[in-house]
Length: 255
Length: 114
Image 1 (cartoon, rainbow over the protein chains, first blue to last red):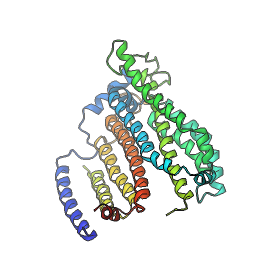
Image 2: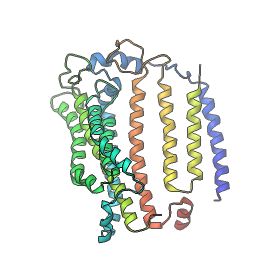
Image 3: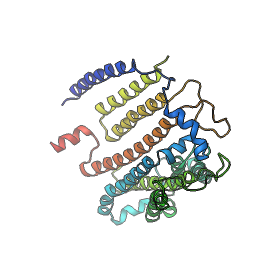
Image 4: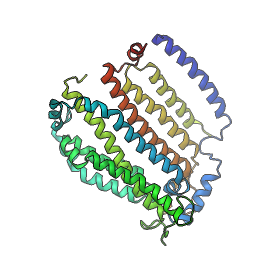
């Protein structure tokens, strides 16, 4: 198929899609006219039921908790998948010369970037931790916090220290941390079952003050486990991809 | 009433799809897929928006303040996580393809197979 033919067929298809889409829009209630009722109901009852003032987190880790288990395992499976897809390649090239490149900084790194990266490692890690532990109060949660936490480790790499990046995040350790995070979430759900409630029932004391860090029972705990799982998954994925980049560069085939 | 956000959805989706169809580089194609998926964020957040309402966080405002739908916001979060997972896997496959076939041009990859 020639590129021109391919583009022509696409334009025909997208025109048809657009016609149907616009036709569908005519029956939608319009932007800003959310018809409800679920959003309104959840907003009204969530704070009273869970003592969490962050209703999005309450939805994620409480009302839709079972979905979020699946979501977390999607990420877990993806990290495992990346490691699996790239593993065989790495073994193929376990020749001596490629290791030499691992101490090198990424190309184009200036001293300013290195310094700024190192300065930001601490604050970014703290911010990630803050986000992961405040799901129940403010716009944050385990997923956001985990990604920010992983960024702190990526900054170490950006500072030109791949060896240091590997030293503070050895793959085996990060693997285990990720597994603990994923299993912790599932275990909280099973604990509720053992105690005689439904899966992922919020069986912990909810606290007395809505919005306090210690409030909201299992929501805060699940957010913590999700946070370390997400951080571990992203560190694994970034580490695997970066390692491939350095291997390619070591081969001299930087195309 | 306004439909502007929904037109933005169609635009982002169309631009991303056009990029996928005409792309000559696998990494570029993956980025185009991210663009396509971004349209779903705008769509589901747009569906849940209520004119004049605040974000569904009641830390320092009364519980009865009108707020936008928190369910679609949680869904957007799921969407982002899935996108990150898909992107990571696709990039890993792109690396594999480059290692094995020495090219990242989808057209050449097709010819190699046939």
